[in-house]
Each structure stands twice: as C-alpha cells, then as structure tokens.
Image 1: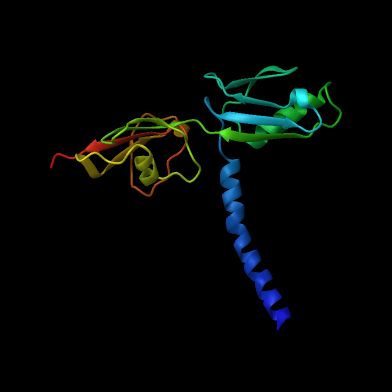
Image 2: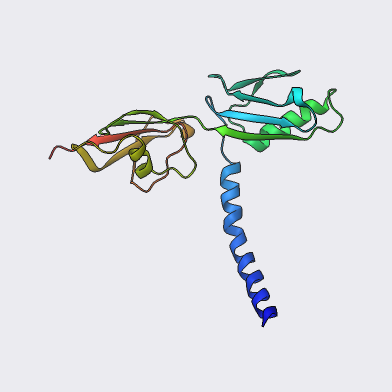
Length: 179
C-alpha cells in the first residue's frame, strides 16, 4: 500500500515539474532595464558584492570593471558576463550570482483615483494595478484599458483585460466612459 502511494506521488511530482520549469524559465527571461535594483554577490569576495540600480543608460558601476552595460541582459547573462570578466586577470574561480531586489516601476494613468508610478510585483495583473492606484473613478470605462509595453519598445497602445499581466515599465491607461 505504501509502495503504491509512493509510486503515485512520484508520478504526479514528475507531471508537475514541467509547469514549474516554465515558471522558472519565465523569470530567467526577464530583461534588465533602467531603474531595476540588483544585488551582485561574489562568494568569498565582499568587496565585489554590491547592490546597485541600473542607470538611465542601463549601466552599473562595478569594482575593477568600471561601468558595465547590463541593459537588456537577463540575470543569467549578467552572471556569465561578470564571471568571464573576473576570470580575466582578477579571480581564479569566481562564484557570481545576480538577483533582482526591486523591479522598475509601472505607471497607471487615466480614470483611477491615484494615477502615478508604483512598484512592480511579480504576478501583477491589471486588476491588482488598479487596486494599488486606489481603484476606478466613477467615470472609468469598464472595458477600455490600454498598455504601452516598454519591453516591446513600442509606443502603440495595446488593448488589455483586467486579468492580463502588467510588466515592469508598462504604462497603463484607463479610459473614461461617456455614459
């Protein structure tokens, strides 16, 4: 009986793994941009472990290496870049990790009670973004919501729904209803 239970548990665990991998892959594909705050940790090298925010140009100051352009890199790509650069005459076997401490803000404007910039939180939807901004005004449209995605380099508004994801750097507009 216990053997059967254990077998079933293992089967269901393996079935669930691909979906957890997909979530992990989604986070690893996040591209750094101006305003993101990151922590770089080099194991055993306190002077090379720093917390910093990407500048408007997408660079970070880093000991020994100077200004490092991190704009558009994933945390994995930045980890590999720093590891390669530190191997080149600085450390024998650097163990580098890069983590995001704070994502850049998203912005919400239009028919909400408190328009402005708000800290991004993973898993953010339009519904939650509206809640963060104090909710809809009485004249808010019930279906005209638009986003301009910084990550897609566009300036063209895309129509979205309340359950759609909001990303760091997004600019959301809630239209007013005429009736």
